[in-house]
Every structure is written in structure tokens, then in C-alpha cells.
Image (cartoon, rainbow, N blue to C red; front, top):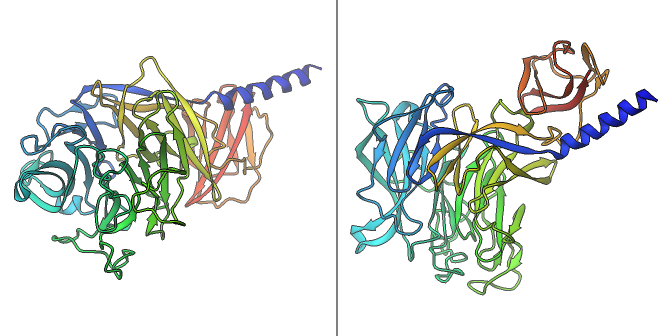
Length: 472
């Protein structure tokens, strides 16, 4: 009878654990003015996080991997005198070149009044170079224009930029603003607006990659990689799979997440014939238009109004999140979503924000050189670091595929599966804290662990094994 009661309690506790999912971010006691992007050089051991302010300055937070990060007093770059911050304009995005470590190149995206085009409001991507005298300063006089695109209005400018795993620069452009695609750019293949662009910036002027999908079509601009987007405010690449993740801000009803796997191109995401999966407008729409539906969409019920895309988590602090995509909403920043993948199926979970204080109006995610996650609050100017991830680690694998016994266990855990000897193993507690990290072995000593539920994550190259056990 006692054994049965204990077993029932264990099952109830497991169910409670699986349902009690939450993220907790810790505020870094450093403040910025309207932060819009957080970027790392992605160089192993680099301790810096670059914070972009909408008003035109880029600051460095150094020692970000430690308990006491420091905001450098002088900005890394200040272009506030040349940008136009009206409505959604300003300094928008930054991407470090794959050549940054050797040549000091980085790229920024901003809006300005173009003096060579009658002071018309425009988006520009430029390359800058690191100062030769100071590795924490950019050479403000090193700007080289990459591409300038006229904007018909002051919203839906897009402007996110990122280098793909193929070394090409990807540029996310909004439809040009106003409302309801009033300038008819979403499906207009003679416009760079409402598109994902892909260019080769190894040399300037930029070149069109030979495998861009429309280079043989004289009626479509060569830079276009994908079309049918409204305002892709944030894009990011999964550094392991190479997939491109796109968070496209909706118009009236729906926010959407799109994914472009390696090898896919020329995808039409439907705007403004469609908003998400719903029919929307007539501009450029024809019967039978083929469009790529989002892998996830959510409506504007409540206060959810503007999706903010994040990253596929590839850090080591929270193995239970490894390989999942995390994003939020600018207006409802107390809600987070996580997307995992089981074969060809995408699985969606949502989180309530946990913590004493909730960051308001999250404008961006970021990751440091160790691929740990951050967010920034546009309203109060603070940067927050992910510190706890209470999450059912069966995700992203969605099923235990690891055979372990005994379970429950008191001293030694035996792994029965045939796993390569070069694998690594992590044991994680229910808060996401790593309590054991070592090279793989079939027998694990867990005798010193406290009683509770633990998760095992074993990795060998791109193969994963996942399981849970109860320590008694």
C-alpha cells in the first residue's frame, strides 16, 4: 500500500513539473536609451555584448559572461547625427562579418534622409571597420555604403540583418509602411520592400550570389531571396541547422513565425494576399497564388500585438532548451513561446514570465559568444539575461529515447543504449541547472545528488538522447 501511494505521488509530481513551465530573466544593472538590438561578435571567448540604441549609438557591455558586467563609458559607434528616428526609424540592426576577427568588418542598418535623393526617407546598410587604435571603438570615418533603399513611409521598415551559415548577408525589409500594404510592395517583385534580400559582401560593391533564385528571371530583382513579408522586425539563423527564422509583424489580426530550411529559396510568405493563413488583400494577388504558410501564428486577442523574434537556443546552461526557438511579443512581454521540432512537426509551448519584475516592451533578443540568451526592454532600457528555464526537457525531442535503469535510483544509473564513446553527458535539475557535465560513460554516479527529478541529455555530434529519472 505504501509503495503504491509513493508511486502515485511521484506521477502527480511529474505531471506538475511538466506543467509548471517558466522562464526567469535577471536584470543587468546597466541602462540604455531605447535598445533595439543585442549582438555578439560570435568569437569564442569574446566577453562583449553590443547594445544598439534606436537614437544612433552602439555601446559595449564587457565581461558579460561574469557576475559583474561593465558598460564601457564611450560608445563603440555614434551615428546619431546622420539618422532619422521618426516613428519606427533609427538605428535598427547590426551584424558582424565572418571576417570581423581578421579584418574588423561589421555592418549596420539604419534609416536616414538621403541627400543624394532629395532628402527622401530611406534605409541604408553600411559596412564599418574596427579602429586600428582601439579594439572597443569603430572607425567612424570608415563607412562604406552597401545598399540604400527608399522608404515611402516611416513604419514597417524592417531592417534586421544577419549573416547566414553560407557567409551571405541577409536583409529583412518591410513593405514600406502605411497600412494594409497601401504601397503594394509585398508581392511586387520590382521592389526590394517586403522581401528577404541575399547579397555577397565579400567585396564592395556587393555581388549577387550565383544561386539566388531569380537571377535568370529578368522581371524579378536579383537580390530577392524571399517575398511576401509585412515587417520582418527580427530574423536569425540556427548556427547548427542553418535554418533562417523570420518573425513577421502582422497588420490587424495575426502575428507569424516563418522558417526557411537550408536549400529552400524563392518562398512567398503571402503578404498582402494573406495575413498569416487568412486571406487579406487584393494587391498583386491572383487566383491560386502559392504561398508558404507560417509554422505558427497567434491572434491579437488580449494585448498581443507585435511578435519579437528570438533565437534557436544553442547554449550549454540549459540543455533542456537546446535546439528550441524562443520568441515573445512586444506588447505582451510577460508571454514567451518556444518552438521545438519532432521530425517534420513543429511543437509549440507557451511560458508565463517568472520573476519579481517583468521587463516591459521587449524589443529584441540577443546572444553572447557562449550562445546564452538576453532580452532588452525598450521602455526602461535595461538588458536582462536568461537565468532559469523550468521546462520539460523531453522537448525538443518530445519523447524519452534513452533507456536507463534503475528508475528511481539511489546510487548508480545505468544507460542501456548503444551510444558512441565520444559523446558528452549532462544531468540537469528541474530548474535547468547543470549538476553534472562529463564525457560519456555507461554508468553514472548520482549518489551525491539531492532527491528529486533530473533530466539526462547526451550529445554526440548532431545526435541526441534524452531521458528523465527520479533520485531517491
